[in-house]
Image (cartoon, rainbow, N blue to C red; front, side):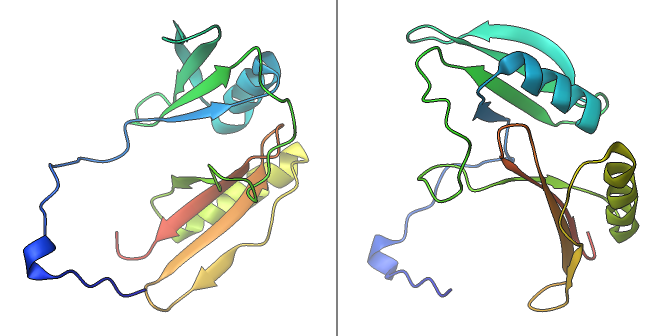
Length: 149
């Protein structure tokens, strides 16, 4: 993908330091919280009521990391299984430090009986590897390694 910008239209966006957190709307918050705790090692930090309307988010973190994930309960949610074909989230990608960590994730998921895709290694345009599995709502969770970082 190539992006071109005319100098007259060039604008500098204010600074960003990364993603603060991701909020996922889930069908059954109890099931999802248990799954994210058991499979990803996340723990509940707090429960936050939604600012507009009813509902709330269970905010979880992986201790010792900057990873925060909100599991959102909306009483009027359609309760359909997730599809990356609908507008919105396509997948949740979580970084791992080393390529070997993907092999450890595959063995870990196998031991728990959690279905996952094959590890895909790519060398161009930049070295990276990834593997995907799904949460109880069908949301694609990807573990992703970027070479050289």
